[in-house]
Image (cartoon, rainbow, N blue to C red; front, side, top):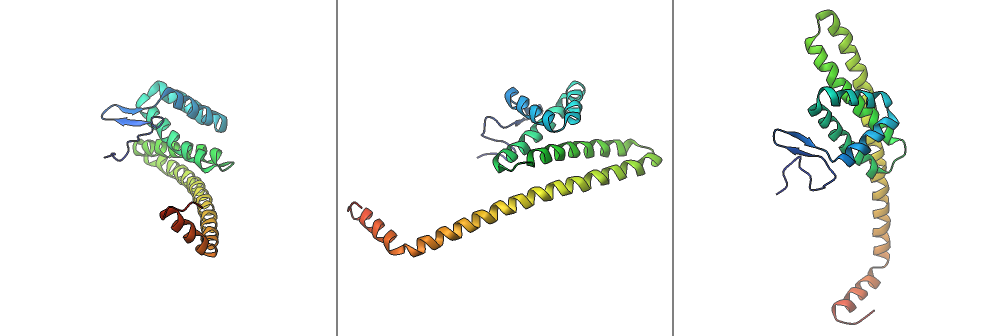
Length: 171
């Protein structure tokens, strides 16, 4: 039985108990290339993070790989840039959240406003992704309904073909 969070896909990152994520070098390179193309400043943050906190770096790249894989499957132009921006915003929100915990009362208000701004933008990006998914699903539903109507119109022919197949007559 497949455990939640573990993938059979050899190209997807895997969690190892106590050791973090195993990210194939090839995948890491592709993820960083996409990030650098779409958000060079976030790519720089990741490079610094790799030097300062490899475990956090690996987790961030693994999450980015997961979301960028979704983008690849969606085949939606422009979504890649939005997803990279969303990954960057999520990273920034988490960093600001950590900073908020350690900040003085006077700094907390400014940090909280920045978190709120980032969360608003992140919400918009996620909503856009959901809207794209809904459009894709609506298109699939339309095609399925069309196929059902075609099958209904050809019911007798389909039944005769299946009957011939089951009784040994070739069609």
